[in-house]
Amino acid sequence: MAKLHISQDDTGFWQLSFEDDDGSLTLISHQFPGPEHLIEDARELVEKGKVPNAAIVIGAPRPAAASFSRETGDYSKPAPQKAD
Amino acid sequence: MASIFWFADGGGTDRLTPPVLVRWIRTQSPALIVYGGDVYRKGTEAEFGLFFEQFGSNMAGVCEIAGNHDWDTPSNAPFPDRIPVGYERFWSRFPPPLSEQPIDKTKRGGARYEHVKDIADWRLVFVDTGPCNDENWPVGDPERPKWLRRVLQEKPGRAKIVFAHHSRLSRGKHGDNDTVKTLWDCLFDDRGAPLAALTVGGHDHNVTWYDPRPKVDPDRHIVPFERGIHVHVNGAGGHGHDETSGTFTGFFKPISGTTPQFADDDNWCVTRIDLVGPRAADVSILSFGTNDPPTVTEPKLLKAFKIRF
Image (cartoon, rainbow over all chains, first blue to last red; front, side):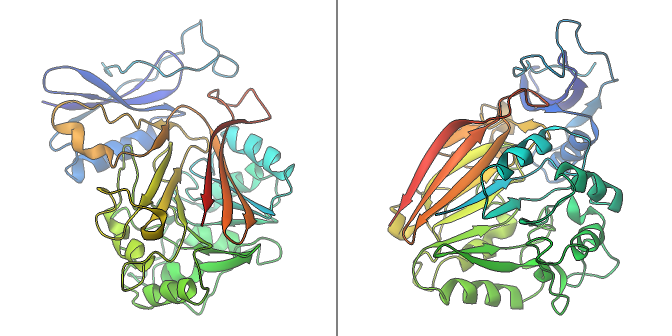
């Protein structure tokens, strides 16, 4: 089953990634300050049939990696990831 | 010359990117600042309070076309009389000249916020598409297409720019917006000749630019300017980014929208539109980098486009 993963990545920001049936991951959105907006968007993607029948998986908050400062670090696009 | 500045999709939170953009814009002697919509998360009075702070508690020279999030605090009236309550209360506090956002309470629903500004030989047209995640514009009000067609046709020539939160073409999580097809159709005369030069929107949190697109099947064809309208999206105003790559796998591929001629999904961006003459405008996409909050106070030019006719 396809899944939409909403999770906090190593930058401390939140991302939305798509997991295909074969398990491959694709980044859809990144650098969001919290999960709420992404949860709404994921629901809309499912409800409008753009990602039909996908499960939405929401990860727990977790601290940013010690190597990255959210305020001053040089942000670069994260890799897609699963929420679990 | 007059300079118009646009950013969208970053307001109403404690995010620190919009204030950086606003501070710089105000150093550029803007003729107008257009906030392209979405005061997060639901356009409540409290969120508009944060939006006010993001603008330095000064709405002079600013107008806003409402986005879908502004419309998430709606009145109880059914369409077409429904209004976004927080949005209307906020902008009612700043009638022109305290801001550049008028409200015509004799009109219904989103038509109350639609207006025109004539600046430096150009006509700027502002259209409310806030409910158009789900509703088809004109949201049940037949007067709105009449108004839009009239304000476009009463000024001869192509020196017109149409601003709306939802763009007919877009790339990203939301993609093309079929809900504003009727709006797009109004931008052309009965023979299919374009009445405007450019549309500007947000909604997808990224930046895209499309070479001129025709009335029919704009997602499929690039045409000469004589037969089409440029389309620009900039929703990179400070609240996350949506990918434009379209390299999704499997059945996910179709959602990403039409392929633009330029795309960026990493940078916080302001769009500057310099109205340099009655048949000329320069559009600059300016980047404040990728850090949140930005670690630069002066933007770099990411891409420039010239509109000439």
